[in-house]
Length: 178
Image 1 (tube, helix red, strand yellow):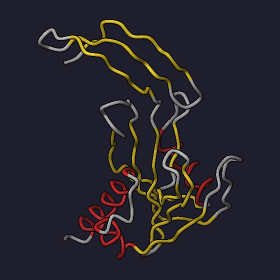
Image 2 (image 1 turned 90 degrees about the vertical axis):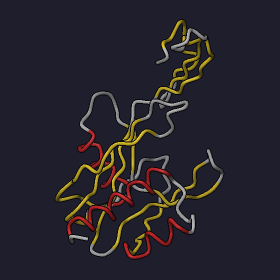
Image 3 (image 1 turned 60 degrees about the horizontal axis):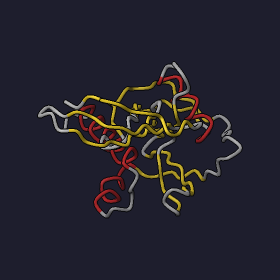
Image 4 (image 1 turned 90 degrees about the horizontal axis):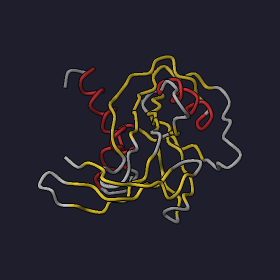
C-alpha cells in the first residue's frame, strides 16, 4: 500500500485538481506521485430497438472527433443514475424508462481517481437534445449487431464506450440465455 508522506494541490480547476508529492511504499521506499483528482462521472448506453445511440464530438485533448457514450461529470454529491438520466436527455435527446447499473470503471488508476459509473438506458422516449453551450454533438445511431466488429477493428477507441458496449452485449446474452 502507498501512503502520502506529503502532498500539495498544485492546481484546482473546474473539472480536475492536481496533487503532487511523496508516498511511502510498503518496503519503506519513497516515491514521487502526480495524481489528477476527479469527482467521477457517469456514462450511459442508450438502447433504441436494435441500435445504440452514440455521440460524436471533437475532443481537443486527442485532437480529433471520437464516438462516445453520452456521459458527464458528477457535480458535488449527486445521484449517478439521475446524472446519467440528465446527460442522456441533454446530449442525445432521449429519456430512459429504465436504467440498469452496468458496473463501475476507473478511467486510469495510474494517475487519476476518476470513477465512471455505467448504466444501460432502456425503454427510451425521444425528447429534445439540449447540449451545453460548449458542446458540439452529433448523434450517431449504431446497430448493436455491428458493435463487436467495430471494437475488434479498433474503430471505437474511447474506453468507457467500449466497456459500456461490452456490458450491453453481456446483458443481451444473459437476457436471451446465451
